[in-house]
Amino acid sequence: MEDRKRLLKERQKKFGRMRQVQGNKANQILKEKERKKSRIMKAAIDLFSRHGLANIAVEDITLKANIGKGTFYSFFKKKEDVLGSYLNIGLNKSIEEFEQQFSPATPFLSQIRLLAVSFMKHLFADKDLAIIMFKERFIAWGKENENEATVERALEKIIENAKNKHEIDPRMDTKFMAQMVHGICTMYITFWLNGAIQSKTMLLSQINRAVTIIMNGASSQHEGNYVNPDTSLPSFG
Image 1 (cartoon, rainbow, N blue to C red):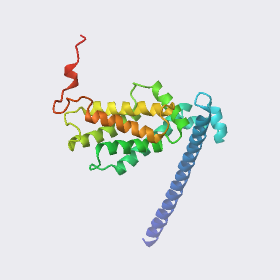
Image 2 (image 1 turned 180 degrees about the horizontal axis):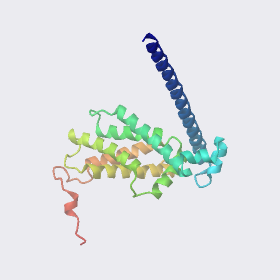
Image 3 (image 1 turned 90 degrees about the vertical axis):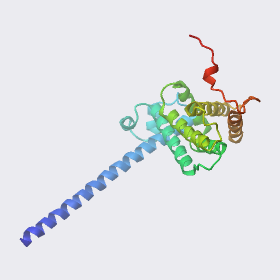
Image 4 (image 1 turned 30 degrees about the vertical axis):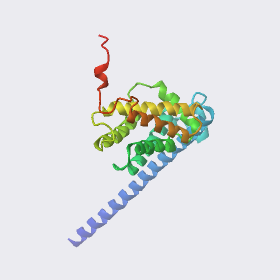
């Protein structure tokens, strides 16, 4: 009986060691895959930034990253997917930073500025690369895009919070206002990318001015006379 117990314990220890070894190997394989993917992205982003997306082939990326084409295609279907992955990472970092610093007590305009600064930090640190990302973005403009939806959800959170504090009229359409603010930000970022706005500081200032006008209204007779804009549109049948 004692021998059977001893053998059972030894067998359990052996299986435990085997599982640990297998787990260590699996972790090593996973880490190696992550390192390879990181090398691909680093090489691709450097090449895109210096030469442009159109002038870079998958072969250029694999040569710079010192990996085979098969390895590249195990992570990405095409070179554009590398840019998309980079965009996703930057967007997630921006939203994460915004969420960490978000406070319901913070004024509406300050929250908009906080979100914009997070994007400038994590998405638009490299202006040349930002230009390439925007070109790709405009090609897909109007199509369903999870990145665009993520930005608008963050804006909707800010707007709902402002409505709860009566900084914004509670009757305002949250989704529509989020799209409007998003559009304004996109327009001024485009101006910055093409050189019409010279600095990020000026960019943030212009966004702040435009959103302030939206908040305050342009009409001298708007106060106390909220009108649903859809009810004043003509019918086109």
